[in-house]
Image 1 (cartoon, helix red, strand yellow):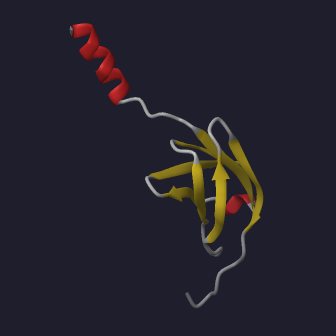
Image 2 (cartoon, one colour):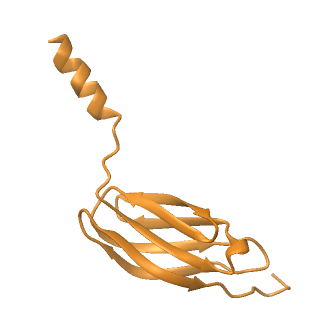
Length: 102
């Protein structure tokens, strides 16, 4: 009985990783935050030298949101589909400067 409770407790705190999303941004020094959002799942990635990768817990279609450092503006990529066991490469995302008035 105690073993069953211990095993159940272990799985309760284990996050399942179904797939992932990776890519790069240009310019790489603009790296801020990157998010993947889908119904029932939100993942945050980290940048390293302009590249990012994140794990997602559900297969499905995600909206990728890049929140760069100023003076660049947020960029979104719609319909990023991730299948079970797949790391989807979205390629290079070129960031655009934002308005100086905002």
